Length: 197
Image 1 (cartoon, rainbow, N blue to C red):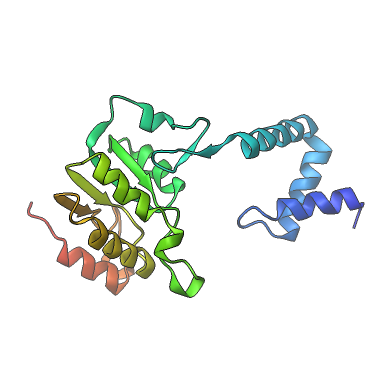
Image 2 (cartoon, rainbow, N blue to C red):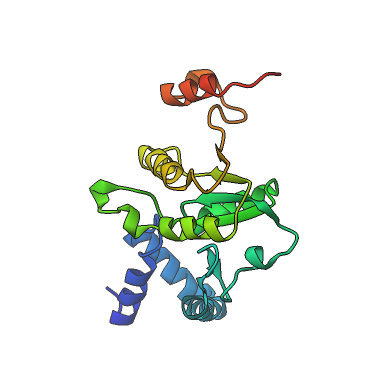
């Protein structure tokens, strides 16, 4: 313990994923010893973000305004809607620059063990959106965990009367992956979803 203010800074830094007590102490000392102006800028950015970043009314991703830039972009393809679990999934897909459709963020995945049911997700809003804005293809991009796949099947059952085509992102062997290092479920998925060359 150096001072109560230092201890509080260390405690608050530990809310970040993967940051334990020692790492938080090193971060705090680094900011105090060498980077005070950057530390102040960080504090200001955190304050602005926590107060000003909200949920997009249309897709439920993060936004500075009621409607996020992706939903407001008229160049996006309205015929395809990609359903993801979190806003971080939107960021990951956008970084590929390979998808130009719209998004819908569920806010998590079904997990009865953690007390997360369909009522806790944005599934009702998804159904309402599909009724109001018909799309040609609903692409399910939930995680490959048991919970993610259960969520995908639940959504499929909930929306199948409102959309003609429901697809799921391909799963299997990653680029550069060696067969000997992959788990049996990944290999089984790759075999089932094989495509013609």
